[in-house]
Image 1 (cartoon, rainbow, N blue to C red):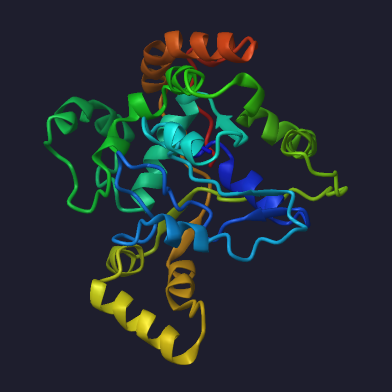
Image 2 (cartoon, rainbow, N blue to C red):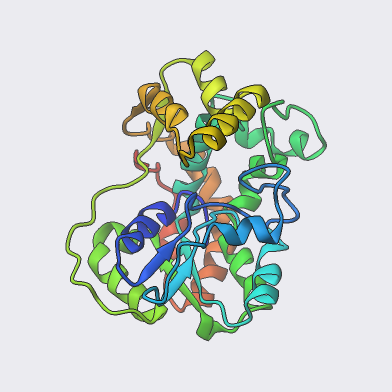
Amino acid sequence: MGAPKCGTTALSEYLRGHAQVFMSQPKEPHFFCSDFDYYYRPGEATLDHYLELFADAGPEHEAVGEASVWYLYSQQAVPGILEFSPNARLVVMVRNPVELVPSLHSQLRYSLDEDEPDVRRAWELQGERAAGGHVPSTCRVPEFLQYRAAASLGAQLERLYTHASREQVQVIVFDDLRSDARGVYTRALEFLGVEDDGRDSFPRVNANKAHRGGALARITQRPPASLVAAARGVKRVTGVERLGVLSRLRSSNRVEGERAAIDAELADELARAFADDIGLLGELIGRDLSHWARARAAQPGS
């Protein structure tokens, strides 16, 4: 589970390749985010529909799960998960918020939830947006644009621990995934109760993305209801589960590359804004994260 832009996609893809692990497709259904109304297929957020995502899981799969990145931020997701499965194991991925905010801003730009190209201006707009102003018409969940709340991972983890025991939670720091992916992977396998398969290849996943063209992006990221209905009709008639047309169009319209670093002044402001939350997160996981709060320009990256 979350947070976004903390390596969740990479780890979930590594786990997907393990013979004893079953991960849903799509990886982020967000079924339990009842406060965000963010199920992957609007209008079909029923338990039966959600369970269909795991219909192909078999007895060989010792761990069955999904990787919705907004579960940690949602106030309803964790209680809902534990009501559904009291013994669920929760993997939480966290990252330095000074890096997370610009990375999240870039991702929300790509998903068309954010229309402000300047990360500083987006940070400054939080108050107005909380009151309902300057929210893009294409933004699916206005709370996503509250960058300070979304990146306050200490407060979110503290809330999680009011519902779940520490024994059923594993916290992974994004820095560790970058520096020792193999170690993170094997510890995750141990936590999930599956055998080490000896995997030694951990390619980069979910690099920073942008669109080549805005018009095509609006079609591929927010396909018209008529197009979605037509595609479903073709699938029913042909029996083909996935046509892949939108996926190919998205790929052709996608550019991957390093995200530009934010300026030192904004990095200073973010470091001050998150200093207390970083301290709280460090206390909760028993780790000194004070270097995160020292002002510095965030490095370019994912």
